Image (cartoon, rainbow, N blue to C red):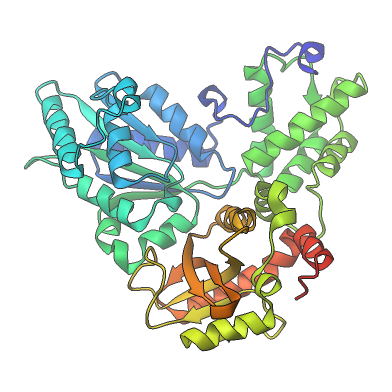
Length: 437
């Protein structure tokens, strides 16, 4: 709408991870240089973390554009893969197998070991060519533990002198916590470089906005005033994705007024229309709320869905020792159990946060919504079956797996404080249907 008015060739504040728009702030430039160094030196494992919207995926795309032709690359954007599917995706990106072969099902009977041997042969074939291979996995905090273990095994593909596969894990801040878990100790010890992307400061936000306008061809036709840029920084907290949202909507406001100067009032109007300005809410909380807003009306928290009687029955039946995370009426409790009933839950975990429980039949939407909300908040989600006898079979939603009950209690407490602000609509919906706390 506003592109033609401002003489722009394209939207300057699109949310797509276009590498040409990467602004190399001090933090992003350092990360970029470290990644290039790691690839040149074949450092093994590299971990890059950052909060939601800090530009991790854009950084990955920009890195791939700068890699020379002697470096083969594989980029995995979907972490919800089995070990076999991950290996097939890597081989496909390296050009060993084709997408047509995958679609035709020609690899269905190929074993995991055969896939690993094929990858190893490919990597060995790069040595006489003086070529190398890089695997980048985005959203790595969502990788299941058994897949992370498979990735560790891939890092063992080496010669006497060097690693054959450079692996870069990119993810949200809780990726570091995940790697420090006892189950991933061997992988964590292999990480040679760690870097955390930081939000932009006020001065850098101004440069970031100018950079994107210049790339889109409109640096001379529209300007943000200094006060408008200061407000953008304050509202976004320096998170590039939020900056893009606010500036895009502010340009639309400027276009509607036929103005070429974007003022604080326009920025304020943009933030209001995006529901960014909320008392006591930070930018990270807002992003997490938006991630699940479409499904928020379906989310019913644990105490609301089960009810006190069913909850008591569940705990009595399985001998679970439940500790309330706060003195208030808690929705999220922690479970201490000697035997875990989720086959995906790590065996070393002694505690987890019980986030919800639903009838097996007819509750898929509610389970999906709660799962989306938890994952958007940075939690790994597990499921466990519960047999309530006359009440039927239920499915529990578990958030996180902890070796320390105190840590689990702290996370439950954090969820209890976050839930009212993030899911106000869900609380209203639950009350309207009679599912009172």
